[in-house]
Image (cartoon, rainbow, N blue to C red):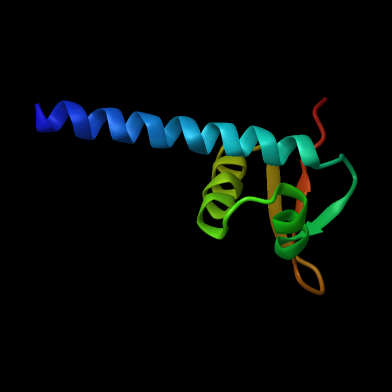
Length: 79
């Protein structure tokens, strides 16, 4: 029973990460660069949830992260 509960919690958290990633993606525009603070203000997500959303989008190849003057995040244009 405890394993089932733990699995359900993990599934729920993964769903939350996916939901937050889609919310974050909806606030971004192709060709625009965003700092972490800008994404935090635009998305209104708590810090931990924003980090997981960013990591999820980077892992899925939807955004990339690189250093300009600051670390910036940018949508990868879809062909």
